[in-house]
Length: 122
Image 1 (spheres, rainbow, N blue to C red):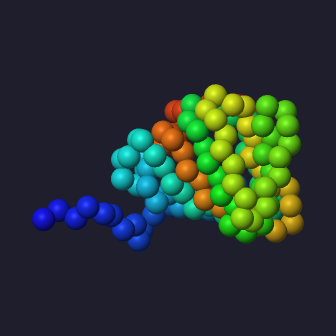
Image 2 (cartoon, helix red, strand yellow):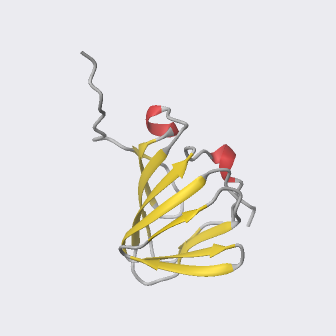
């Protein structure tokens, strides 16, 4: 009988050049699931990404530290224990301008894809 659950013990570690740890537990890179992606991340102090306008909803839950979001020109800072949903087609920039690393979980619906993130050039 086929098991009706999957335990993820070996998430896909996304290669990065900015010091950020990205471990995708479920999603396009790990199991080919394009409906949802779930990733554990650690953003180092001073990390930032270019602005982007993704074609997916993104939910973020902060485990440790703080993370800054610039959403349609408004700056929002979340701390450990807080979460946010950013709707698709919203211009956003993610960063960690704080002194300690930020550990968080990100869930994207549909799944994160580089083709759907629409990152701006620096």
